Length: 487
Ligand SMILES: Cc1cc2nc3c(=O)[nH]c(=O)nc-3n(C[C@H](O)[C@H](O)[C@H](O)COP(=O)(O)OP(=O)(O)OC[C@H]3O[C@@H](n4cnc5c(N)ncnc54)[C@H](O)[C@@H]3O)c2cc1C
Ligand SMILES: NC(=O)c1ccc[n+]([C@@H]2O[C@H](COP(=O)([O-])OP(=O)(O)OC[C@H]3O[C@@H](n4cnc5c(N)ncnc54)[C@H](O)[C@@H]3O)[C@@H](O)[C@H]2O)c1
View 1 (cartoon, protein in one colour):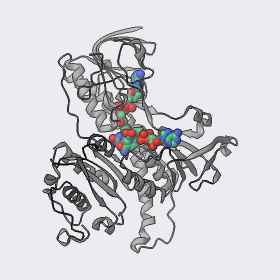
View 2 (view 1 turned 60 degrees about the vertical axis):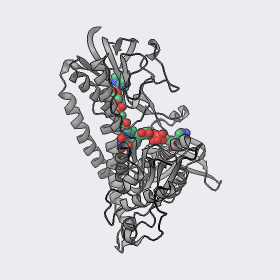
View 3 (view 1 turned 90 degrees about the vertical axis):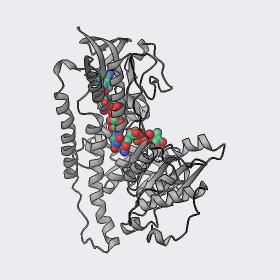
View 4 (view 1 turned 45 degrees about the horizontal axis):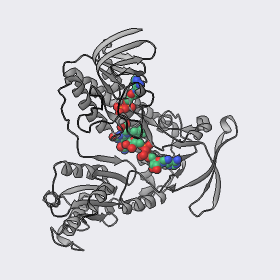
């Protein structure tokens, strides 16, 4: 067995691991990057980028459906060429992943090791059967993987996860998507718009990451108006039928009226959540504090675990499984592993998440659930609201579906957070996150410029409503003419 002695070992060469490696090296430490799977990162290979490529194709197809409402006749139904759709998705995906692989190629060979690492003790990692590493400090950056109920595995290759979808050469005729969370909504709606028959099933009425009851019920309706979505489904039968190319998945479920329905789909896509890749790391060999999911507990600002020289970053940390968070956490964990024991608190930005469904969803700062949990006893928060159904620019563009709630603190007028389902939520979410990180009050946000006619005028309406409800500004004027028509 090869023996290696190193200052910092980074386990996992995804977004968090690459950042951790660079940050540790920048501190002058010797470092090694260990990767068991393919280089290229989850985000570029099977996550953010291919999903957005599929959505982009779906949006192009959807324009034809919207055109008649503007008076533009579409005389022939658009032909969606599934092979060409998937070809572009994979070609562009490979280009993005290729950039990452090129960056990894630029890392000196002696700093890279292929294979799966596991802990032998708190300073020793074994990589496959070929190498033992003695590391003074270790960063766990092993990412996450899809999780689904074990019995579903009996569906064999008719059960898919996101990774499999992006390997398709052609689009199937039909799929059942389980889990109307972030991945399910994005993939399911895109496939529907690309002509695939989509049935989407959830549990407990949850849709996307929303926690605000009004927005949740809006979301349930708006997506269900477009494709079959039952967020609290009762699926009684899910089994394989037929052989070879004729094989299908038979589904038996109670529809929303309570009637039993039987149907067949080509594939079941499990989008029922992800679990951190820490279960095969040999954590039982080290005395480390774990949370209820078996993930090492870590300080939010330093990413240090209960074992001082072990840090954790990215999806593996079970904190906020998003790309920009993985990048930030990787940098902080690597920097601290490099400079150990003189560790520093890193910058943790205001929470921001976006779902690229249509309408989009954005979550900023504290969620409704968090705000309500912290402030409801003293009755010291208020909610400002705008509906995008009558909002000027949204109506102009026929994107007038959605609702925005902004939360503020009574007394101080501090902006606490927001949940949104609606047009351009990815951009409104950024404005709100920047304001949140600057710790702005609602009044300060209202002092900022708003152009006309733009969707952001809807945000201004919600902020004015909030300011009034916080008793810090005048009551809302129903038809505010100086605000601009439809603002
Ligand atoms: C379909 C989908 C869409 C997404 N869309 C978005 C989006 O639009 N925006 C966004 O912000 N986020 C999105 N995400 C989330 C984002 O992709 C992840 O948060 C991010 O990629 C996590 O990075 P990471 O470095 O923690 O993990 P990864 O990039 O997965 O890296 C972990 C690496 O560790 C390796 N590894 C695991 N165990 C071991 C071991 N024992 N030894 C050695 N190596 C090991 C793995 O092979 C992997 O390469 C999406 C995710 C999915 C699945
Ligand atoms: N746009 C983005 O930023 C983006 C896109 C995709 C993924 N991601 C990241 O990936 C993470 C994982 O996404 P995800 O969609 O897998 O998880 P998720 O937690 O967002 O959604 C899982 C959904 O599955 C449902 N569910 C659980 N068990 C079920 C069952 N047996 N049957 C039917 N439904 C069931 C849950 O109620 C939930 O709605 C997200 O939290 C997000 O951080 C981000």
